[in-house]
Image (cartoon, rainbow, N blue to C red; front, side, top):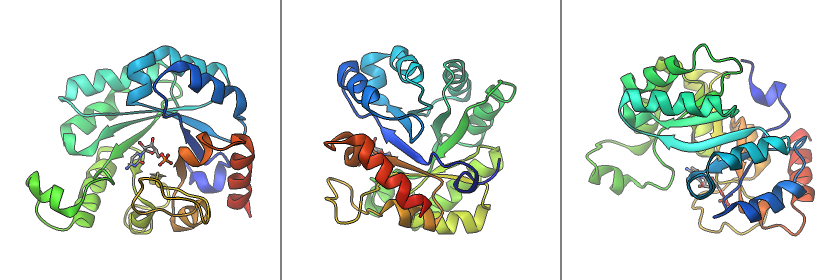
Length: 237
Ligand code: C5P
């Protein structure tokens, strides 16, 4: 797979962070699938089920199913296969599930036609150094990110979710084909909301991010399509 930032203009992934299908459908009706893809996470999927994936696909969108699977290898393998059967474009698992779990996830979809991009979650960007220590992980947080990213790469997954701050080091260590998916994106001058470390779309891409997960800056905008277009243009400039 070539670097998406060179070969694929659709780098924006809109986070559909809704608690039910109705507001989600309203937004899908307004967004343009030629400008962005969408992400469906735990809240929406748990409340609405697989039909929300089908709905987004019926509107023409590629779906990142962000369920961060983390379980025994056989269970994760079956969950990833079920996601592939839904025809999702991207799916993810927790790298801290360990090597055998990651291998099982890769193996489960190895022969699937139009295999989803399989992404690992390293250290949740919400976690701080002190919280890592509380769960028994010694050493600096950034080293744990690199350690888990290496596990992800060695198992043959396609890349990781990371903060833009980690992107440059991860591309240096693991190569330009290692796919980086980055949340915490804000337009220049916009409110950070509850995100701690934010970067602009253009900065995230210049640091090495391939796909930008963007929620509220688009979902809460008066004109979501205009914001999408503005971001897409800032990326191609
Ligand atoms: O609204 P906002 O742009 O902050 O939304 C970011 C999206 O990315 C949300 O769906 C959030 O759950 C997700 N996310 C994140 N940080 C991570 C992983 C996922 O903000 N480390």
